[in-house]
Amino acid sequence: MKHAYVFPGQGSQFPGMGKNLYDTNAKAKELFEKANEILGFRISDVMFGGTEEDLKQTKVTQPAVFLHAVIAFLCTEHSTPEMVAGHSLGEFSALVANGVLSFEEALRLVAIRANAMQKACELQPSTMAAVLALEDAKVEEICAKVAAETGEVVVPANYNCPGQLVISGSLKGIDIACAEMKAAGAKRAMVLPVGGAFHSPLMAPAREELKAAIEKATFNTPACPVYQNVAAAAVTDPAQIKQNLIDQLTGAVKWTQSVQAMIADGAKEFTEVGPGKVLQGLVQKINKETVVNGIN
Image 1 (cartoon, rainbow, N blue to C red):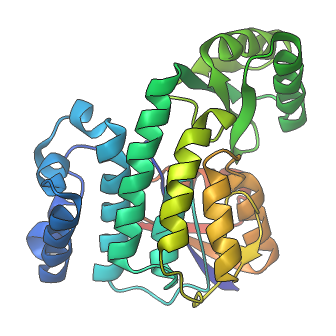
Image 2 (cartoon, helix red, strand yellow):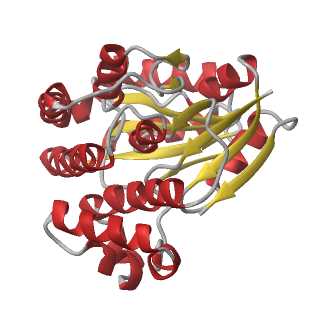
Image 3 (spheres, rainbow, N blue to C red):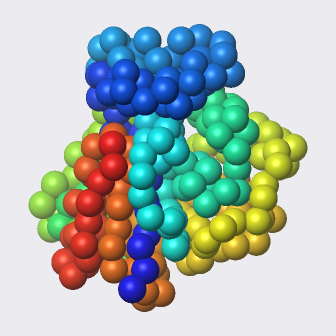
């Protein structure tokens, strides 16, 4: 039986996040202050005292979720991870937890990623939509059909759990796809309040910027395997970890498949580290036999 640690992505943020850590742990306070210096603005002030709207800006959200997760991991007692995974942005947190990236290096990469994604969103209006209670294969089929017939970008983006798949693409493409998903029997197909088409080909401009930064960064040999979003399998080679991180920006987050692979490799207990309980819920939906808990 193995103990897996998982790290959340964008969407888990909330006003006041991380404040308790800052107020009660000297090491946490030091790390938050170091982050303020690295980022060039007091992100801790936005996290602790900002509104939901303030926290929704991609340039704030991604570093904020990363910081809450990583500082919680570094400053609380826990067993040694035997495997790690992160949902989208959370993959960077997972790579600090297994020693691949230093806190500072990972934070710099997250800031570059967030700003590059923000710019890509501004280049072309785009969005994402959640499709509920439709088979993955049917969602994939409809995305391919709409893309072929219209020339619009529509792709599966987040395989969150069985019966919950998020699609990503152009505004028109997503509208047409949502109508077709409902006609095919989806319980819901609803556009999400996000800034753009994450994990789709429309993130290609951001991918190039992130690639340049990742190629310059130092990636160490991991202390335990990371189950990466695009691979949905254990990865331990630093060069492959780099490539998968780059590919993740335009590729799908295979969360269902990653959790299934971790369970197949012996994971029984999953600890979510960071804001919220989203991943705990998804892991339980993927496999009810798992034990889930959280550190926040």
